Every structure is written in structure tokens, then in C-alpha cells.
Image (cartoon, rainbow, N blue to C red):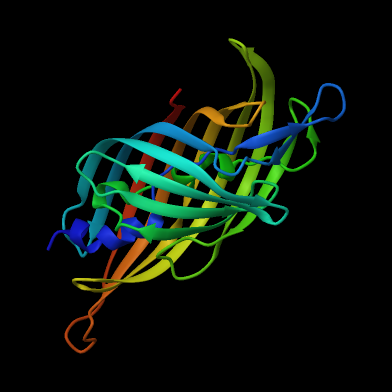
Length: 274
């Protein structure tokens, strides 16, 4: 049996694709600094084109390693459902040619830190299931703190996150930096960079038995934000995931567990559609 068939649910556990804007508001602060706070208007919508290249390799059960390379172009539509003192809730509609629509709801706290992702409709397609947290919500992965920031300022990323189809909560950890403030055309923008790691562990049913996945993904991310509303104009990310795999037969008396590994490399580019 193809190891990729065993690993389909494992890929889904890595996350669900969509790139959510930071939708940040700017408030007054000291000269030469900006304060980026998460204050979107209820009902605001943003549409993005997301280009993703995924290279994955699975070494499973002693069979020859299998390698896949895939290029996908998606449209992600984001609608702000709720915005208040306790945080923000956003609905994400993900569309890709030849694949069913997927709908997610995402929760952020007031400082734009990602708190949870809930799958509402649709089963993630196999082609779209090998993505990392920054491909899903890159602006959240590098969200700056709620304090005045000047170019060169840095911050620590340490967020508890709940993801769909995983066995437990996990933590996104790393660091970010405000690179510069600039003007593009008539728009004032901020450029951010970040690097973060996300441990993942899950146990999921497959046709061959119960699949256990354990490992982590590491992401480097850059983004350009409008300062007037904080929407992401453009973002790029590079993610590498390394995972251990084990499939235990449903009937433990029939066979021993089968072990293997999976490596996933994802490069993505997100562009705001005017």
C-alpha cells in the first residue's frame, strides 16, 4: 500500500490552508514608532491569492521513499464576524479549482495572537493538507506585541494554539522584528519578519489503522502591512516540517506497528487582491 495513502490524514493534521490578514489598527504613540493593535471592523472582508509549492517525501515501512511536488493556487476570503475587548473572530472561505470549499473560523486575542482554529465545513483535500501554521495564518505567526514599536524592535512569540484534527494543544514559539516603515505608492506600510517553530502531535484513524504523527515545523516569514488598517498586502513564508510516523493495526494481534518518517517543505506567496 502506498505510504502516501497512510499519510493522508497525517498531512491533514499539519493544518488547513488559508492566509488570514492581521487586520491591524494603528494608534498614536511616540514619534518614530507605531502601535499595532488588532481592531478590525465587523463585516470587513479581504480576498487573497495564495500560491503554494509543496515538496513532501515519505519513508514508510521499509518501502522506497515516495516524493511528491505540487503547485496550488488558492483564493482565501476572510470576513470579520466579531470584534470586541475579548478578541476577534474571523470566517475563512478557502477555494481551489477542482477541490471542495473549506470553511474555518479563527479566534484571535486583542493583541492579534492566534488562539484557535475550528474547521466548520469541508474535509481538507489531500493536496491542501500539508501546510504549516504560517501558510494558514502567517500574520498571526509573526504578530507584534501591543506596544509602541520602532524599526528594529523585536518581540518574542510564545502562543498556545488549538488546531483542528490534532490530539492536543500546542505552542508556537519564536521571535519577530519590525524591519522598517515605508511608503509604497500612496500607502504607508510596515515590513515584518519572523521565525517560529510549531510542535505537532496527533493520533488519527486511517484505512490501515491508527496513525500517530509527531514532530515539528519551522517557518521563516516576511510580510508587508498597510498601516491604515493593517491588512497584509503581501507575504512570503518557507516552512520545513520533520515528522515521525507510526501506524498501529486496529487489531493489535494481527501485525506489529509500521514506522516511518515524513519531511515537508512548503513555500508560499500571498497577495491581496485589490
